[in-house]
Image (tube, rainbow, N blue to C red; front, side, top):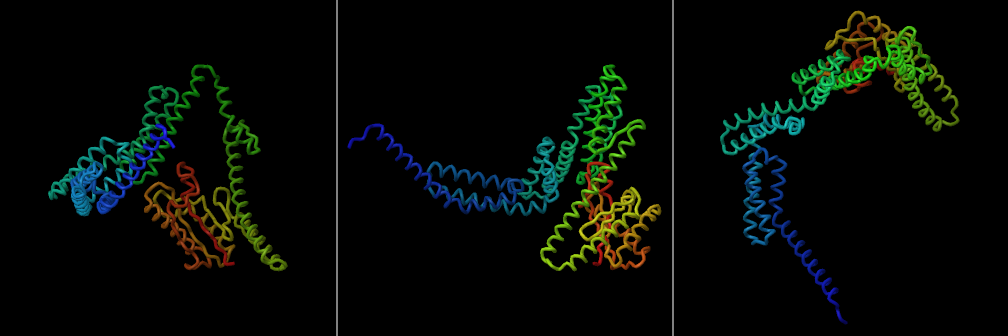
Length: 476
């Protein structure tokens, strides 16, 4: 049997490929065996961030490690490779030890670096970040050399530069786009047609920057102000575009006024209302708002009823034939609805929301307002709290939980403390004035900003989140 030249070439190619695969496998197996201990030391060094905290020892270890890899690739002697690996392992382990001293001596600078890194300072404050990195590398290097005093001096400079980089990054992240938009608005001469709105945007931008400078770690408020500033400048741009035809007399004032009514007309129509503007916007706006609030309440109550129906169906399945028990259950539910309607009747519009939570009743006295940062109940709200007392009496023997809540502005700890103080203030008032309540019957709990019921990005939303909720837990 003869073999042609093409077939012979294919066989040779397969043999070469096979030999290459065998050689590669053998080399990989040899590498795993030789490098195992050094790779463990490398992993430990990386986990300890030795490249940052002990740069000299880490760099020395890396030099020997790469040399060993290069020698293995070129097929050099095992003894020479092992020598480099031993040196690399030793230096990696030394770098790990050095990081422990750095963690103590350079602790404040390390913390500042971590904060700046979290703020993405390398991207948003590149120059400040690089300056801080150079200063920190100098501190770490001097510490490795045993020059502790010089290392501490460099670390103080690095810490200051990291903090500056962090603040610059936070400001850039939240404020730069708004600055760009304001600059664009000024180039487009938006202030000719919307000067107040543009000035409002500039003022809010300055407020956001001031808030960030004073407390960079509570970014909720400045972020919200910055977002509002961005909205206002875009709003000013829109107003300028909208008013330009009026200014150029391409659109009459009457046509412009009529066009502004159309969104309210559409909203009212969707809510099955008729919007009439003979007395201005107030009447149709209030009618639409009232209808939306009614729908929200109906939606909430419907979800509660569905939960109750599901629970009742489960009971029916388990108690088929026991009609007397079911009849008593239905009577009890009707009694609960009667009590709920009675509690609702105690409060006027804007005073409180009354909701169900399973078998519990939630009273949210929206008319109760605390001064900023205060837990003092002002006398003007005593009348509202008396109505709350009357509502509690509808459910004798119940346990009461007074919940305090805040919006997201301010620090987490201070908000939690303030919510607890306000809940305790209402609890103290009820115990002092409500008949039949003992200290064991009323519990006060503060949740801070953890349980919002509305959007913290708007004034109205934050006002709704700054609230007291009273949960009545009937004894039955």
